[in-house]
Every structure is written in C-alpha cells, then in structure tokens.
Image (cartoon, rainbow, N blue to C red; front, side, top):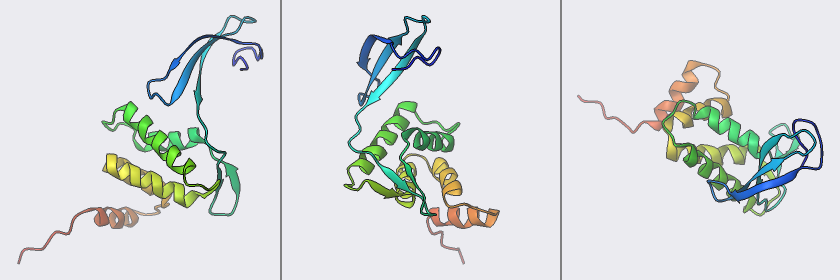
Amino acid sequence: MRCPFCGNIDTQVKDSRPAEDHVSIRRRRFCPACGGRFTTYERVQLRDLVVIKSNGKREDFDRDKLERSIRISMQKRPIDPERIDQMISGIVRRLESMGETDIPSKTIGEIVMEALARIDTVAYVRFASVYKNFQAADDFDKFVSELRPDVKKEE
C-alpha cells in the first residue's frame, strides 16, 4: 500500500481488525520512510461493476461516489451513521448479486431511492430532487403530493 504522505510503496501493517460494520477489515499502517501512520479498509468485491450512464457513457462503479451522494441526502438527519453504512453495503451487495456486470445508472438510482424511502422521507426527497433533476418548485410539489396519502375533502 502506497504511503499517502511520502509515496513510499513499502508500508507495514501494524494492526488488523474487523471494522465496525463487520463487512470490511480495518488496517493500521506505518511508513518506515517518513514515520506516517494511516488507516486502510479492505472489503470483499464479488465482481467489477460498470455503470452505464443515461448518455451511454460507461464508467467503473465507485462505492465512494455512491456513499457521498447518500450521505449528502442524509445531512443533518437523525440517522445513525452505522445504519447508513449498513444501507450502503446492502445496496452494493444487491448490485453485485444481480448477476450483471453492466448496470444502468437508472437501476442504481431506483435502488437507492427505495432504500432511502424506507429510512427517511426527507433524505428520499433530497436524493430524488437531484436524481430526477427537479427544475422548479412545481416538480417538488408534484413529487411530494405523490408521497402523501389521499386526503378526502370534507363536504
């Protein structure tokens, strides 16, 4: 593992243990060249996934990119960070177990929205506003009205 401080490729593992989510291994590393210490995480990857964008462009699946977008939608929400990590791991496992290596971005977006809807409605709406590219307040209003249960008008 390359040292992030000096670039030395000969670093040493000082400590390994399961991470809090129990689906990755946390390793404390030491660089003998500069004395720097840093942490790495190792995860099981079942297959290399490729995301097919809506414009046809292909790019490697990036778990960190998925995690960033989900965490942005959940900013300042009362959700336990461990619960978010579990949700992200579940989404990645679901994508890897689909049997396909090429996954449309639309499929990923739908899976994320489904998971967010079960956890937090506000985060769900935030994510949907970017995913569905809302352009005006009317777009929000229409989307949110679909979330509300039908309210019968009193006569």
